[in-house]
Length: 385
Image (tube, rainbow, N blue to C red; front, side):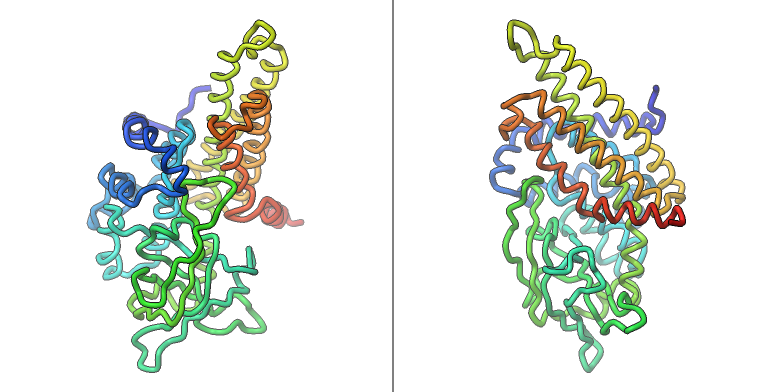
């Protein structure tokens, strides 16, 4: 079936991204993988390429486009090459929607020009040690000063992607205690300058996968945050977080699909070249059947993702639809990548082969952005169950 969601502009962008990856990423990727993060100046190169500007309004230096399709192209091309762009996904996919949705004109004028160039990289800090998915249980507090000029931020966050290189972090904090009627009230979003006294980056966490995506612990000790850096209305942070979840979850579904498609590509190349018992691994019926089954599943995942992208661009993607896409595509990717690793035999367990890294990278897709169990709860609730 012919894929119809991309036009000539998207394909031209795909060619540019593919050439960029070949020239600027692949030659250095082993070094980045060993270091556990991409170099800070890499983000400036992404800024020069225009990666951060696509969905930023023109008045702030962006292209002013309202579409998820360019993000889809980047997800497919990075997976195809077996690489990642570090914390840049959080910068664009998670942080930008909050800025566009909640920031005042004055805030946008201050933040977006440097956002576009990569001069200031953004991250978002929600999860805390011991709370996991229970965001309403967060302990980080932001107390308004007596003169009303700033908040005093105290607490800690963990699993913060992009946390090492971030220049500004959207921090979820309690500006008021929870009420007995609604634990979700009283949470606010503050944009924190990482150079502020009392802000500290703790451990760079050693993850199973996504090695080049810096993930850190953060702590705040009497960090002063100007009231001008409150994002949206005080106390409404939890409701804001829910508004971006459909896009975030579709993005995870897209990434999972792209990884599964890449796994088939890596495996087809491997089994064609690898010779055992006097013939290529690809010549065995089991190999053909396994890859055929994987291809059928990935074709179905592609259809789900493409439908979700069109719905998102049209402003019609519902939370339940996004949850369904994430659940289906992440489960498909887990199965496909596992089967593809098996076809590599012992070499599939070696990190020098992209399938091994893909196997590790893929595992978190069923956890972050809401676990598979949470997705099932959302879907079943939408079904009226």
